[in-house]
Length: 412
Ligand code: C5P
Image (cartoon, rainbow, N blue to C red; front, side, top):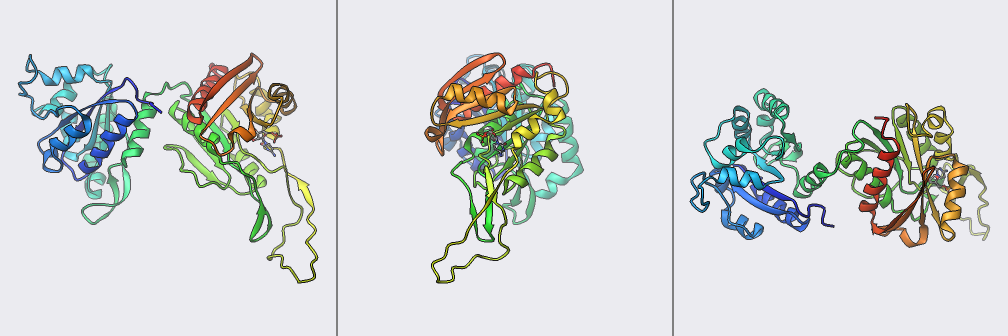
């Protein structure tokens, strides 16, 4: 995908060993369609050379406020006026302190101060030793920088170059990339709590065997990511899948349909949108054995009997809050179901929307999408039918999130 197509990012590097990660970040931003202008402080040049950054960004690197390459000799003005965002990664403790005071004795800090504050966002990815990070001065500076309009992209935790372990590492390049992409998405679900189910469920037969299905969870994970990008608080109740949790999303792992129902009921209490993408098993073994069922050599096979699982979506849709959410207005829960069909998509999805009692139902052809990275959707609601042509699951998820935002727009 080209999620940053048309975006011009000024990537500022300050002094810290995490500069080595900035090289990969620069590549990742460009791969996603952005153009990148690198600006480095003198301290950053101790860690990585401008030559490396020029080669990766395919543009000359700027380091001095006296750079005579600019006809007006004002690189701080020219560079900041062109930017869609300034991203400081790594941002040292010293540079944060400098930004806070509006000091501007080098090109990068001068450019941050000179940026049109309402048009050019400043994103910072701090990187420092854990003691420096935890120091009240740093935390105080951070709070003030955010109050002054900067966006903090957070820090990672773990082994640090100094040999200590704790908070303060710069986020990994791909984490920062995900955050930058999210930053540019419209915040159409700000103020909402979105609850998503995803993946298969696992219904135990005995302690080592069970019944599950081939759902990959990819559509639900993409929806959770898109809802987070759109500014919502997101809880993702996931069946057993090994997908990475989207950044900023709270993930609750569950196994069986009953576990999933319990988690959903709990987190739905203050949710305003519920999107059920999970492929929940319709039945579970009536009595899961406590111990592994052994073959006894007689050739006799175990007799399994089943009971029906609760319908999580229908339970929530028919709850008091679910009913109040039917119109998308007021304090209710707006429920969105999925239907995986193999034929007659429109007719089957229409029937399912009514039988589940949900305001919105998303139809897709199951066999054409299981495990794939793309899909095509039919979105049915009171307002009619929308067709989302084949695209990546993330693109479709963003469109679906926009439809939910539209349907609930007076709610947040
Ligand atoms: O009834 P069917 O499984 O075709 O319905 C699919 C929709 O209902 C999906 O949104 C799925 O997540 C949800 N569902 C559920 N609990 C079930 C079965 C399906 O939430 N037990």
